[in-house]
Length: 318
Image 1 (spheres, rainbow, N blue to C red):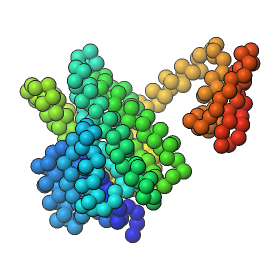
Image 2 (cartoon, helix red, strand yellow):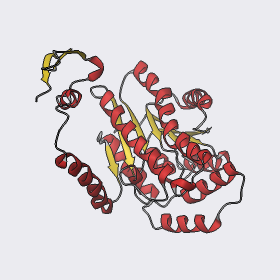
Image 3 (tube, helix red, strand yellow):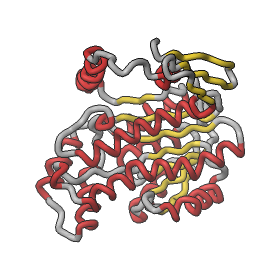
Image 4 (cartoon, one colour):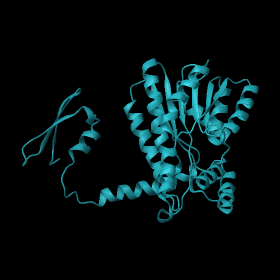
């Protein structure tokens, strides 16, 4: 069998869109899948579909934004299918509008689902992965909105930038272990996000859905990539231990524009504050969490790092 055949996966947002695409791809590869979603009705339909296709799956109704539900959801999944070794933090929402028009309730709702839930998912399953040993993998879904700012999407962009940074740190903290990390940064994919996000925001605010906005967003999404094909791409990527997964090359110039602005800020700065020892240590591959830094004389500012790799000196003059 080729990994991840025989493994057990926990996929959030699995009742539709990319989550469903990932679940279908996993089943096709011989993995068992716990389908987690807040939409119990759709989950029932998906369980029937995948079971008839020969898959071993179970439904786990879960509000990913509620920390109190996660441990029980993980226990239910493992009781039905066995130990989970694949976590897909995929559930997400969009909403709000221009920053000055976005209410705090909508802001918090988006952050809770898009980034807080990813942290909770990792906090729930990572200790289980470590305790059991063996190969495991965590995949967090962010967005190209986690690399490129988009006006009128401030709350969504903030959550997705956070998701990318969170995934990068998690990858580095797990380097050298048998637990892999990937981050999916999709462009436009033909999902139900326009509908589900519109319904969720309207319910949160106690108002009618803005049908015109939902129709416009749904039309844009409909022209995007096939979520089933994206699911297959994700499974291929995690098998190859690939960290960053993108779905569309057309975003590259937009990402490069952001990076160019950042690089220009550094190249044009005159360096008036001297050398930053923290940056020097990070660039040298030093784990700051294990560092014992002892400042030297004020006029010299020699920083001594002592850690598992030995002792290094960093001087403020460079």
